[in-house]
Image 1 (cartoon, rainbow, N blue to C red):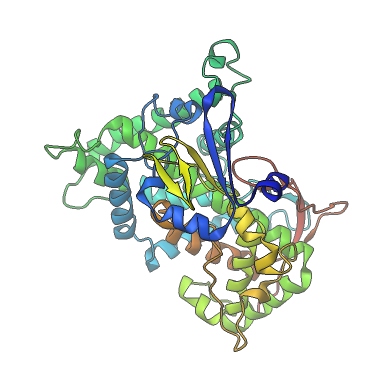
Image 2: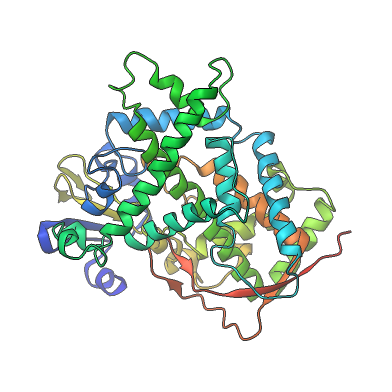
Length: 437
């Protein structure tokens, strides 16, 4: 796409096989303008994405229209009420880190594969909000759900055969990814059906415990079905929460350790700040105001290791225009966050990992509107507050407790593995317990 952009400019449109129209946006100002408009707030109707929701638009991430608005508001409201942005949520993150640290302590000094290592920890934080439950590290059920999300990301995307030729699912169910998508859907829906049944039997209407309890209460209202509060929809919303709440944060943690072992001087500086501000005390999210270098380092992680290089695909809800270009209804619009984060004209040295770019002359953190790991505008990530807290607390805990080095023989490539979610190439680290001051 770099060559195509160089030849054609910052707004590039194609019509691909099957008649699908795709527009690529590379420039920050264009992305910001498009994302501020309701005309660009729809989601594509790609068949691969619809398979998971019974070929209808359910859930939050891949939905649009009135039921999307309704359920986005529901999720934001109840995530906040259940502790997102509060000390109770930080306590959950810290308790899940304690479980992780116990396991890691048993293998100090031996190589640890980093990719996907933190998925279950991050899933458990979310799962305690959603279902008031957690998975033990040796629980095969938990690993099954982690694997299901990984399979989803390896299958979904504009390159999937089913988006341009849905009929391929009949003759190539494996190659087209159809079978994996069905397995992902059935795995998540069977789990949520079981959870809904369990929660109905123990529901206290005056004291809802978690997101499922609150959803059950909405299902009892007279207009529930009209507003989309159905058992099938909660299953799709559950998949959305897995996707948004697990993979992106755990992948950001993988990138953070990759950069720390590639830049031991930065790791040491972060740890010095942790020791000075926290000592042996566990971090809370409010500590970030006293830890500008740690926060700037995480900002640089999310810039240089952009997890969603093309964001989640948008679509035009009606015929519209952008910068005098006519864009028809139903056009698939890709917002290239990676192009914004790696723009040499703005950042100067985008390939360099340099936290100082987010530090002001007085030592405070410098905010930058062009750092957009959670998107911008009407479809920005609803889990941003939770993800920022998780990333800060878990990263700080990891560097407070352990010192990381590259495993022997590792090349530590920055060339990402190709997927919807941009994982670093597989790598391993060796770690030692730190002597805390």
